Image 1 (cartoon, helix red, strand yellow):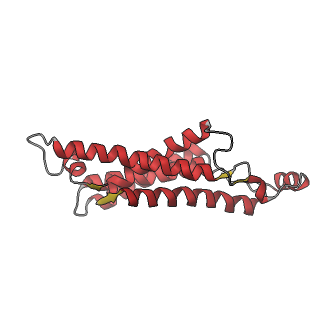
Image 2 (spheres, rainbow, N blue to C red):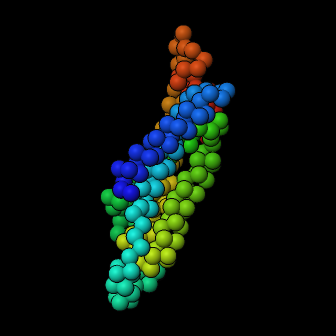
Length: 191
């Protein structure tokens, strides 16, 4: 299965999920953002985890070169300064911060911080487990990635918190209770 197939399956899965849950009580927007979050997580997995390669030939080459699992672990963050990968890691997790805020009833900065830390750590641990199982890795398990994922999540949370506060202060007339405006402005974001 290639990346395009993977993304198509994810989008279809999200559409089915959305349709199945949209008939239940509650705002349709909760399910729209839930489906978007599901698609986001799968796209993030396609970038950070896939492809997983189980190749005896590559494993033999790495073993011949004396590769050890510790060769792909970077414990000192930003040793070479801030790189393009770091900026991309921040950018990749901004939607995580936005969507986690929009699907939960209440999201404090502490909740967002914990979610971002868990997401970044889980991603890096999954990459480490895959490297251990494969016997080689083309990726680095980097503590800077966890920090950048956390920063991106918090940036997404802050942008959403600002949007929510703005919407709560500027309620226009004739807004339906099931509108996107109503859904977002009812969110409670605490500092």
